[in-house]
Length: 410
Image (cartoon, rainbow, N blue to C red; front, side, top):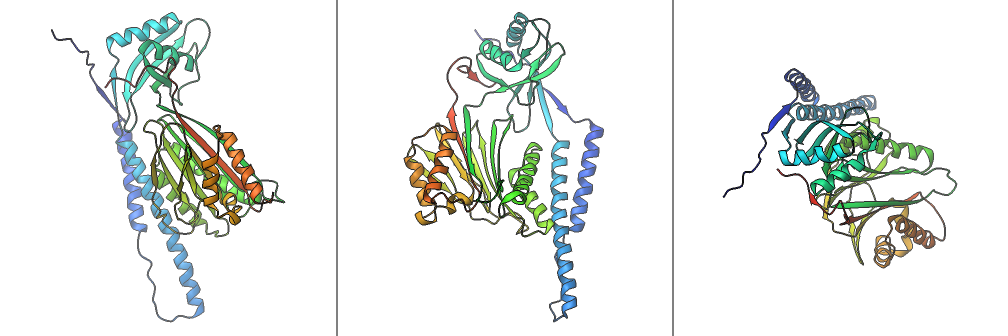
């Protein structure tokens, strides 16, 4: 006897036709502008007086600025086209699972108005629910996710963009698959002697698609001005990542922005590690940044990408380095002030030996231990800003409700 399989129908949700056409029209306009600005710099190679050489240099600078603007316009055209053609697929929840959800939430005094799956390009299927609390006051959204994880025997969590609480007003929430890996981070830093603030800045960014990005920027020199430069880099990167720019494109846009400023003395390095907690992989991108390290028990791998700081060349030519990660791996990133302090101990080799012998397991304790080791090697001198950031990655715990299956049926 065959078992009847419930296969709900699928619907497609696209951007309204008028809005799509307007976006595509803007994209064509930007693309045409970029095409008109693009071109080679031409000048006569004959001997010219010094005044004319100055004019040529000025014309060259104007041409370079046009190429930067050209790249920005082309990138914006690409993003607009991508948004205009984006398609979301949604389908109703299977009847049996729908009854379980409604019954579970009703027992908790939560009313449901809408309930469906949504599939987004490049992202995992989400379960969308419009909910409101009809009694017992408000409930934390995370608690509701735990309840449904147990009821559905799935490892689920609320997306980062969902409201924090379920209250008396109907609001839309999205439940997503819980990544198989979790992370913990830590940092330690020392400010250069005779300075009151660091020229280094760092950030850990998390997105709803199981992505964690480590960012570390080092402004030229030290002090307040260097800190402003590196802070500006991180602010721009965060905005571009949130806007769903590809990492290579985001780095190139920031590089071109620094190049257009024409302030060679106010450069900044940029160090990036982008992790996928669903796949257990990471990708490193560097613009003039120091070496990074991956620690797996006593084994240590060095990640070194030769590149220049932001704002020197028009195009960042270095390629990303991708790595497979596993349970218990640590990623260690640091500014060049840390490794430079190990000059008498052969720089990276000394760091690799130290990391191999390290027994600490907490990322914060690891970062502090690394900094203490470097300060001992430099006899306590801090000749440049030092920043160390550490991320540890582990498989999710097997306890309830996370012991259930992952994701939603296709």
